Every structure is written in structure tokens, then in C-alpha cells.
Length: 315
Image (cartoon, rainbow, N blue to C red; front, side, top):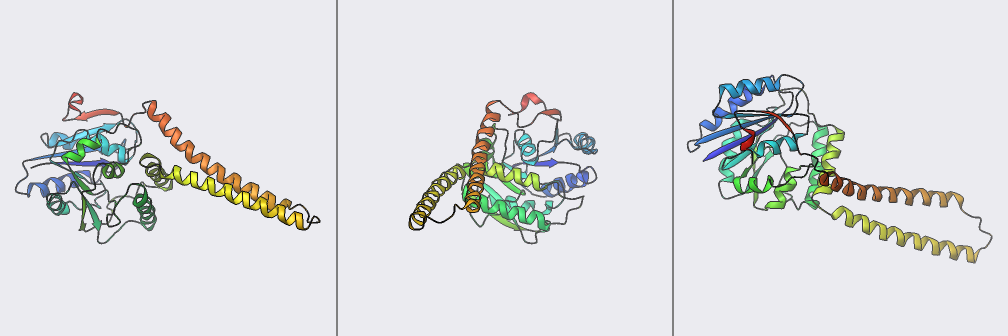
């Protein structure tokens, strides 16, 4: 059995060496693992992460591959860069902040080898901030509807896929990568396993409100036309409501001609329906904008340099 591990790295120079050693030592203890491929993707860190990755690549020439991206493309795009080099029978995704304990790797591999295509992890003791937990909850609710995710599955970034799923994921060439959306487009043979969730060892999460909104928009507009259908239904509903309001106003005016024109209520209606129209136009515009960007071949990522790998060997 060959194992690939993809780690997106951003400003983790102080812990990436320890994390690498823990991952490798844990997997080496699994008896039937023949080859380990650890892919460290530097997402344009502003610290010395790439220098540390280069050092690790020299130390573990047959195991560690480094990818240095030219700009910060985000976690999912960085993972895609790593996946395009992965060649293992199973591919693990691990964050760089030590909140995903390497000691849980054997448990994850054991579960997926029961015949599943994907194995997610459920955190028995979620140590994320309340802010990120709330963001994950919103993402979960959206995903349940739009990508047909089973309610029992938590979309953890600590997960494992098999080679068949990998081959399908890397066919996606759009600039707006959302790994979980691609997974559920490919397979429903998904399971999960309970693991421990460690405290963050370095800094704070890079996910802010803008990145969370960007992630939600990727889910909304990349993997479903449900929002457009909802927009259409809202449009029909608002038209119906407006028609009823007009009839009511005409009847009242007919029964009592002395009723003064309701400028306040009319203004409120105009503002309300204008707001609804702007929201729906914005939603449609989001779809059109993303299609335009994709047609103009915006890259998923651009690699500045590799370590222990030839760019010509990329899938």
C-alpha cells in the first residue's frame, strides 16, 4: 500500500518540521505501507515556511515533495496543487497547525480500507474557536442541501480519499476549487471516524469572515443551480404578492375614494422589492461572473518551484 499526504502550508515555519517528523514516524509504524509520499504545499507564506520545506526535502529526498506557489490561492487550491502530484493508493489531507493529530492516521486508513471511497473525521472534542464553529455550522447546512451531503458527515479538512476519487477530482480545471463539493459530485460511498482534535499550536486561524463568505459562495454557485431555482421561485412569489397588494389597494380605493394616497407604504414597498431584485440580480451575476472567469482560463494556481519533483511529471 502506498500513501500520499497533502499538507497545505501557510506561515507554519515554527512547527512544520515537527509535524513532518510526526506524520512520517506514524505512517512508518503501519506494517503494510510500502511507500510514503508527503507533499508540502507552501501557499505563499510570509515567513520561512518554504525554507523549512526545502530543508525537509533535502533531508527526506525519497519522501518529501515541496510545492511553492507564486501567490496565496487559498487552502482548497493549494490542496489541488498537491493532489496533482499525488500517486498513493490512499491520499490523506492534513492541516499544518497540528490540530489534526498524526496519531489518528492508522484509524482513518483502517476505516477507508473497509471498502469506502472517502473517510471524513468527526471531532470528539472540537477545539476550534466559536467563530469558526459557527462558520462550519453554516457551511454544513448549505452543504446538506446543495451537494447532497449526508447529515451524519462533518466536512472536516482531515480526511482520506482513494486513488479512484483522486483521478476524478484532478480533472476539475476551474479556478474556484471546493474539494468537498467535488467529492460528493463523484461518490456517495463515504464514511467517517471519530478522532481527537488538538489545540492549535501556532497563531490563529487564517479564516476570516471574507474567506468564509467566499467558501459559502463556492458551495452556492459551483456545485448546484438550486439558488437560481430559489431566485426564480422568489421572483414568482413577489410578483404574486405585488398583484394581491394592487388588488387590495384598488378595492379599498373603490370603497372609500377619500382614502389618501399612501406615500409611506408605497415607498416601503418600492424599497423592499428593489432590495429583493438587487439580491436576485447579484446572485445571477455571481454565476455569470464565475463563468466568465472560467472561460478566460484563470489558473487554479501557479507554481514557482518544486523540490524533489519535475514539473514535467505533473498529472
